[in-house]
Image (cartoon, rainbow, N blue to C red):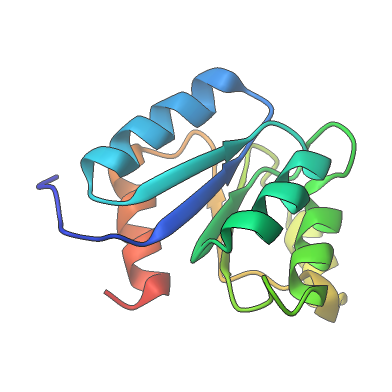
Length: 130
């Protein structure tokens, strides 16, 4: 993938340091600014401070799970407009259906791990409108 000029800020929320670092490196190469959080509580705190354009959130997180992170981001006027991409290794229909019945846990894209970094970057550009 060719690097693009993009200054939008993405928060990566995943308890796997290897996963966070891999996506952070590729997204930085692709022109995004990147911040990272390793658990749900940290994600909420960081998002309120940095006001990301997009949040990549794993569903299986220590502390607050990904669904609760999404609910809290959507419920906070400071972060409610952020695009949310779920990035999960748990691709069961029930996981997606849970969000369909929970208006407070809406997301803009659902990606299944393992997800190639270039696919993730394309999805980010799509949901962010570039």
